[in-house]
Amino acid sequence: MIKRLTCIECPKSCLLSIKIENTRVAKVSGNECPKGEKYAIQEIENPMRILTSAVLTEGLSLKMVPVRTDKPIPKSKIMEAMGQIKKIRLKSPVKSGSIIAENFLSLGVNLLSTRRVS
Amino acid sequence: MVERELVIVGAGPAGMAAAISARESGITDILLLERDQCLGGILNQCVHTGFGIEYFKEALTGPEYADRFIEKIKETPGIDVSLRSFVVRLTREKVLTYIKPGTMEDIKAKAVIMATGCREKTREMVRIAGTRPAGIFSAGLAQKLINIEGLLPGREVVVVGSGDIGLIMARRFTLEGARVKAVIEIQGKSRGLARNMAQCIEDFDIPVYFNHKISRIYGRDRVEKVIVVKVDENFNEIPSSGFEIGCDTVLMSVGLIPENELIEAAGVEIDRKTGSPVSKEVNKTSLPGIFCCGNSFKIYDLADWVSKDAALAGKMAADYIRGVK
Image (cartoon, rainbow over all chains, first blue to last red; front, top):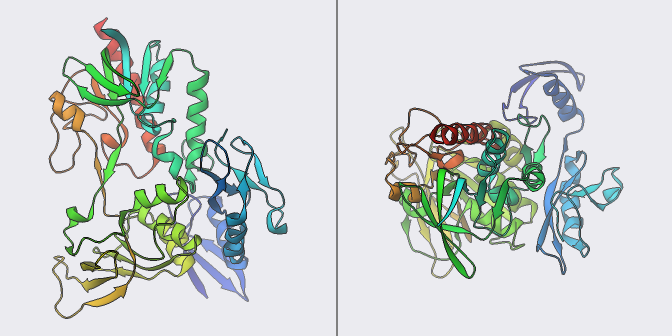
């Protein structure tokens, strides 16, 4: 079976052609760089995404602080992760890159601030 | 009147890159004017990733990308930043008038770089009939409300146009628990990057209608529904192809226009169709010493390309200043 996917690793958006044999990726073509092959295999076996959002603060200089997961999380966990993000109230200043939640949802990733707030 | 070698208007990706580059090209008397309370411009509300892949060879969010430039500006002597400073006038003699809380200043520059970005097209510009209820937002405004103000401006959303901001906001609304009922695109294919169709639309099974447009918006106080029709290759409505979509919010993502009111008033020739300065060369205008870069020069797909061209604008302004010395 051949599956077609748009690579999301960079703005080039390569159209990938993925040959699948017995639920495994046999061959990837159409990618202009090695990231495309890695993405295709991951996407077929277990799709992962970096999640970005923003959390509410209390008593800080900005009302919202933007956040990201430091590594991709399973696509299937995204809405659950959003539920957790909405519960967070940040009360102390952070730098860009500070950890907001360690081992977020026990997924082995950290939730990081992406902007300084004082 | 205070005199400066270089005044840069706007501290988004373009203005910041131009300032750093002008300083690196030897200009030591630079004033960077920004109307907001912080540096970074629209990058601050772009919380998604995808910035910096070309410029820094890593995927950053908008605020992280901005931070790289902000830190550099803070540690560089010779670049003075004035926040909450809104330029209201520019003359061909390069005299700028700006207001900031409690004061109004005139300043004379040897060279000026305008990095004033762009504005979003509105519902009126694509001529959608119907009433004028609450609930119609440009995609970038909705982005600011959600990511900066912490407000969710709608529950059932229809996106008009498939520009990148519209696609990114379709995902953002979905993540926040709203239902995005459709993306309506008059052309036969997406105007945004293919990766955004994949990761913002297909990931969340959001319905997309190509070759369709919204013909009417209904609603008394708040948007209640829209009428969607199919169009032919000349964008004419196909009779009896219409159907209704109930929604409380319409997001407009139908294009951007360079913001050039100030340089136009100064006498710079502007292309009426695109809103860009008429120019054979990137970053230049019809008035020597008045440069224009980033989205105010032309609409870019990527902030990375803005930074690259704006850095060149900084160097061009430095060369101009040295030439007139």
